[in-house]
Image (cartoon, rainbow, N blue to C red; front, side):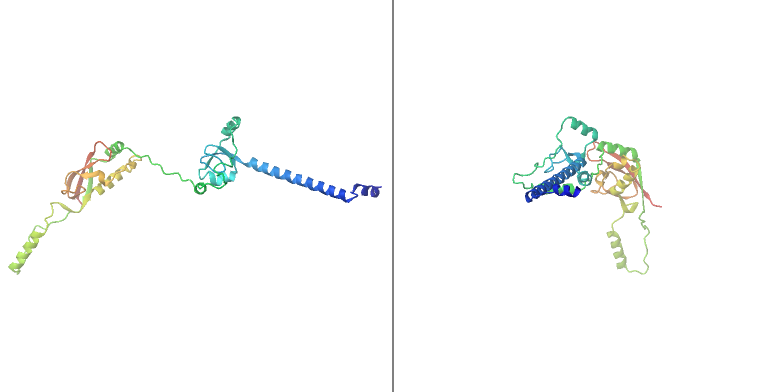
Length: 274
């Protein structure tokens, strides 16, 4: 009975065979389409909602919310500050308010479907990592002067080697009178050193370096910006040059920052190095 019933289930003519074959192909195509739709749906579920910080062609304007792949956000957009994450609580509120969170594929695209010229700049910006600039809060001139007055003592000491002057006249035995006249002329032509003259000098750069070392012990005072132009010798300097002194003694310097109403004075004491 089974052998007699089996041939009756098979198609008996060519038209039936074609109809059964076409039906099988249609069912296979429907199953393939169903698998494709489910794959796209799963990929859409993996996307996350982000807030754009810049205008991005084919996505949307700055401030809009669009779905993107998490790996794209993590590796490119967030490091380049192109977009920002949306907290779960805020995302819930946006959904409750029916805020549009779809991607605008036509944004930034010309009518001729050519990419705008600024696209390359946007892509370059995405590739560059965001580097936060170093922000340093500058002190006001008045506050800087207060810190200098607090941490810099009234007298600043420096030690320098004194130039020894030979006051005894050397006698030349057997020398001619012409030689004595020539020696006297050469001695008169030499510039006479000032009393207590020192090797080198004490300059405003030396004073600034010493003041900065005193300010470095306090975090706020260490931010004071002081240059050589802010310090000048009031006494003891040579005419026309207020940037240095070249002898032993106690001298006055004026410290005044640009923008400060009044300056302050300190004493610079130059003593002989032992």
